[in-house]
Image (cartoon, rainbow, N blue to C red; front, side, top):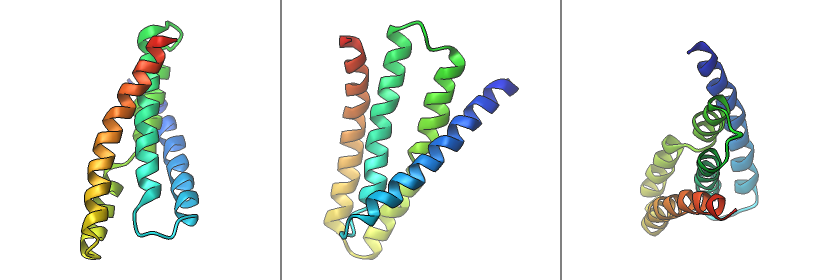
Length: 125
């Protein structure tokens, strides 16, 4: 159990740092109030978790520890629902209702699609 906690913690550490750097970089190059950084990270994270689960189901080289590291740890630290909720609240406070709707619908729809796509890509390999 302690080994799994450490594995997940290391993955989360790397995922969190990756999320922060990716979000800062993306937001630096955009001038709209739409939270493109968090949106992009969440969509990419959905694709990654789909790929990781697809790999673990199709191939036999991902140990349970690597699966925990990549999915629960890295993807859990890389994507973030709390930032998503906060971004939406800020859009509501700024009366950016169209952006809030696009962000919410786009995140959920693209997130589900990307998880599916990740698993599908592994199945066709």
